[in-house]
Image 1 (cartoon, rainbow, N blue to C red):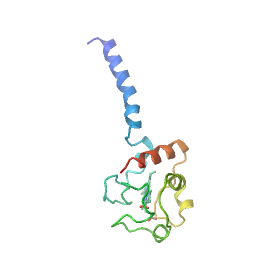
Image 2: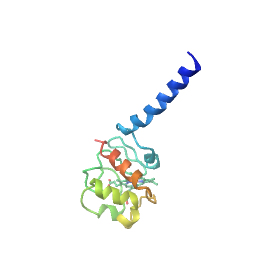
Image 3: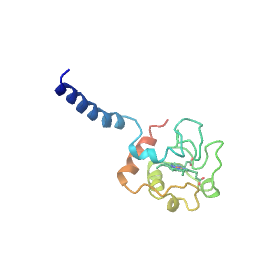
Image 4: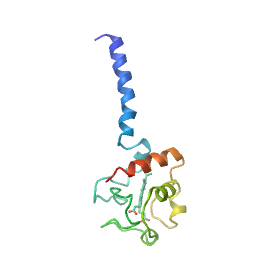
Length: 120
Ligand code: HEC
């Protein structure tokens, strides 16, 4: 293999990575959630499992001890509500125990919410 072929192969591989990520993989911003959340069904960690969170009633993952604020918040997680919560958790649910300041970049919010919708 010549150097030119190698360089070309590396270039193509570099192009393929973002395509793969947009086809269902976790976006880069989601690495900020993974310290506390799992995406497998029923696996709670410092935070509740995010599997099936879109369409789930707020604060109802079995086996997870929510803050009184989250347990009492009511309603269902839909994409709009998730976007608000992830941009500023403590404004959206005052008293939440989620120790995360929020995603400041709206593109990150959108990418993470899109990804959460695939976890089902
Ligand atoms: C430092 C740990 C931590 C980080 C980082 C974190 N979370 Fe959380 N998350 C929690 C905890 C704890 C709760 C439960 C909060 C409560 O009970 O008030 C929670 C709750 C949630 C809920 C509500 C789930 C439900 O069952 O009602 C969602 C959605 C969520 N987190 C998404 C995310 C996303 C997406 C990220 C990354 C952008 C993230 N979290 C980052 C700890 C974390």
